[in-house]
Image (cartoon, rainbow, N blue to C red; front, side, top):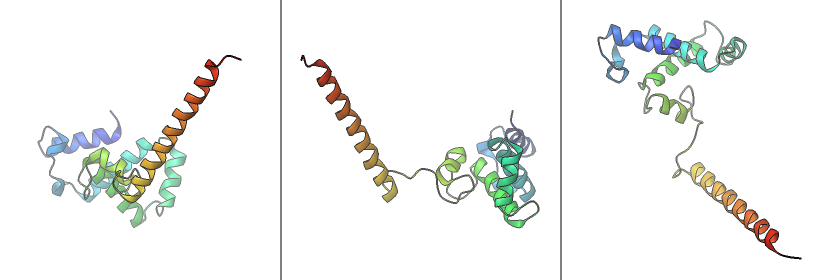
Length: 139
């Protein structure tokens, strides 16, 4: 069990609920959010050097910006962040909820991405058919 899973499990014990989805997010302290976010980030960036560089990019150890980022990650991990749905929400909005990640197909970037992928697939099919037919021709 990873650190973030143990932290989340500890929260379920403290609130006497059986599943993470039943947690009352308002009863989780800022320190618990921060610890959970730090643990989750440690699991993603398991190389301590990478984790440390990420911490430095977010303000460095002891900074309020790093504290807030870890809290946000903890909230997103449990699905308590704004408009996010647990792990899927984090992947959709980026690790700290600051955008990035994938765009739904109906948003402008999503539409452009969909068109690009369709063009790539069509090109691959055309190339495959070309070589298939060329290989079948007799000389």
